[in-house]
Length: 422
Image (cartoon, rainbow, N blue to C red; front, side):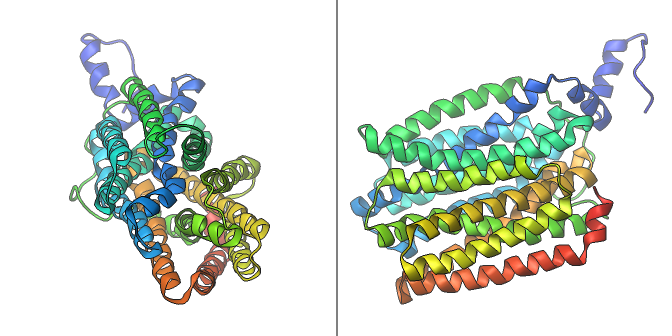
């Protein structure tokens, strides 16, 4: 397509041109730098909700009554909603635009807040988690792609960093906010969701004004399908999943069973302590991405795999020695592993996948990660009910350690492929 120039009927021509992928990128690249940061806010706001319930489960367990196995099932329905959303949201976003996916996702997040705030049964918690998972699936595909669209071609590296950090920072801020508010204000299972609803409303306003355009219909195939990447980008996707999947599975374990481990090791059900550990884990995931952003993608991925491996080693030590400091170290290493795996995977996709397929590619990366993050912690929860928390956590750590080591070996074996996409 030729460069824009003055023509008769220019308004019609420019409108058509703006709707093409090239036109969208040109428009996005003109957005001021602060809009890149603001475009990441909806991702953060929804991810605050994603883990806000974590410190509150001890209260619901006391009031409603359910086992650790049931707790991990409630957590897993979030994964079910997320994976189901990823089968649709990436394709829809690439075809219809970012806003038609993000606006309903934010509305569903508000509905989840209302259900959480009034929950009095396991079914209500399951529905709220399901809605949350659907919303999260939309923002990890459409929302993170929107940050890249707003940034434009010249700022893709910054976009990948900000989108990834927005996700993990929000995931950590949610449980910290919930822990503090539930310990210091009345109605502990209500207040945090009122505050979160207010944050989501500001994210809704941000999406309405976000400078992204509707794309042309460029991809073919069904609207509901397992997300994938264009031909030639499959190895980059596989490398990202190889490290991201063990990392996010480790943090999912901490989120679902971390409070139970703290209760067993410390004899406390303090929601502030549980929330602070989750926040520290995801703050580490955020900070490490800024720290390693100038390293090669191969180095970032290899370091992510090593960090997840060390996290599982320290988890075994923590549960066998009843050491809270070692458990916290395990959580921090898990956060670092997820952060580096996520950044490496997103950077590989941003460097190889065109904008009109980027949301679907992001969805594919997260499907690969969250399948493991859903199955393994649930298995660990029921195993812990059967054989005890110490044995259950040890077996989980052994399996995940093997996956993390395998991921590191895959990266090492494909070093040239990682270098080519740099």
